[in-house]
Image (cartoon, rainbow, N blue to C red):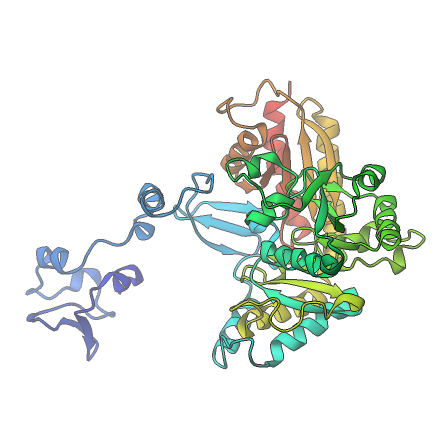
Amino acid sequence: MNPALRLAYPPALVVVSGCARLTSTPNITLPSAGTLVNDFPDSFDASTMKEIVPSPPPIVRNDAAAVQALFQQNVVPSYGRFDIVLSHGSGSYLYDITGRRYLDLGSGIAVSALGHAHPAITEALVEQSRKIIHVSNFYYHEPQGRLAQALVHLIGPGKCFFCNSGVEANEGLFKLARKFGHDEGRFEIITTLNSFHGRTLAGIAATGQEKVKKGFEPLVPGFRQVPYNDLEALRAALSPATAAIMVEGIQGEGGVTLASADYLLGLRRLCDEKKLLLLMDGVQCGHFRTGRFQSFQRILEGVPGGETFLPDGISMAKSLGGGFPIGAFWVRAPYADLLGAGTHGSTYGGSPLACAVALQILDVIQREKLADNARQVGDFFKSGLQQLANNYPSVIQTVRGTGLMLGIELVPQIPNLTGDSDKAQAIRLALLLHAAGLLAIPAGAQIMRFLPPLNLRQGEAEEGLKLIESVVARLAV
């Protein structure tokens, strides 16, 4: 029997002795699964079949418009979605409902660390769900303790709190900073221009992009922004109310911009001098994307003083769960007990199921040496992008990033770039890449990000470069 039709049978249809029968219509017998299409019983009436078996759902009919209509009618329109209706994935590839394949170099915005439908994630989900899926944080369970231990081992002495998303992790760090400065009347957190820290009210107040704040004034007080990679601007912005500084090791939404080593070391000295917390948002740039667990570890490799650098708090999410929702923040040892019982919480945070998946992902990354893969394939891919920039300077202005967090900056006002001129160039390039069979993530108006799975093969990276060149070459003057 066609699986699609099996899904479509109404509840009244039951299987008895290998034949499907309508309980309310005993005179009609449908063929068994082994019956050939042309071997229907003489008594079978095709018109009756149409009446009792509804049409397959839109995903079976490959009806993209019908699926999109479901969203338009029932889903809050808070996302600007591309006109692709996805069906399934495998490894570094996604497939739409027409069967078209796309090389996924966005991985759900740095989420699908092991690609799509990885058997280790499926195994973790199945095995843990047979034991226990959820318990309240009133109780202990081993997966959460083991995951916290693993993260502490990867970062340094401290403790972890678990939640469900990146912005929740950042909210936890905001509360940590408030608690830290409370008795002295300090509450302000200084962040940077072009940063992105989430879309809650506090998250947009912390974010250094006006477009995410518009329409949500008055903003949550206690956040100010200064230029990124400018230590003197940050020092000048300090006030008696300042309790913490928060930065990204690599600004993702802000255009794949790396913090300099001098900037990070200077921030640590400044925070020590002024008794401030140094907080780092590692939601997008963390979890081995750069070839080290956290981006600051890669940036400070071989830099004098870099081996002892630690922030006071780090937020994590995205690749931590490989697609299963989980977030976390780590707090350095001197401050790890500031948030005592009753000061913070999450119903779903750190569930046995989420933690089991996260532990499995860490195991695969270690076993398959995916941190090294991120470096090696990332270097190969970046070198290829740089070659494209050299060959097509009228289209690609710069290449930026490290590991498997890379981006290209487009030349302003590319004459041959097709599409709606009211849309940003990065959006229009994304559409052309889709048509070529590649998914990537725009960042602002001029940057295209590549955030592929950590297990991307060099051959897949080479395929991606060819697809990108097939588009860029047509745009070159």
